[in-house]
Image 1 (cartoon, rainbow, N blue to C red):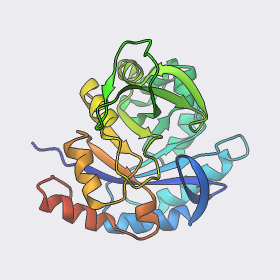
Image 2: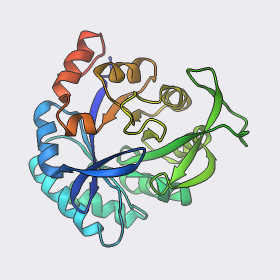
Image 3: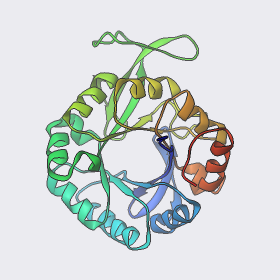
Image 4: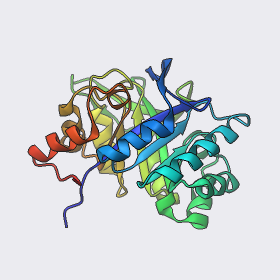
Length: 268
């Protein structure tokens, strides 16, 4: 059986509204999350990701309300991330109508959360989100990745929306996350996020090779060909994009038609 490749719109949510920036900065309004998600539902998106990017105690109620509204209107899987620190948080988000939760900073700071979530709700519910950036200093883990321009580097995990470097090697971390029970990886490279220059194919391929769980490529889509590259060169199982969908530059249906025409298996 050939597994179809998934196309996933991502909605970064701040104060109940969708926002978009570049390299994690310069946020601008992109609309109501449930209205946008409903549009993607009609266009044939395989799932939708909501990321509560300024998740905090005050914002928790906002995102739960958004999830409940979305779950009432949508008929596609919904993944929610941002500020999820405990199994109680996971339970709250799943009860509100999400199918999966995405954990990032909290999992890096307390990796036990992955196993706790997987044991309580199933590995299929736990997505490890990983924000990474290139580091050209010697890697404590000893691994290097060769970039398209011939330079070598390693990829460092960053937390708190890209603000805090951890010194943790991305490949080592994603392998550990899989061992602890993560069922999927959402990989975002800060180098390409919002640039529209395409996915960071070097790290996407390296992570795809390193683990046996599905990898979602994220950060940098600007053209239809970038999706194709993410699947073929990056070896990703799914491709996530935001601004190209939010601002109407392309639709999910157009992406799928293009990919099908180039031999990539997608769900109609």
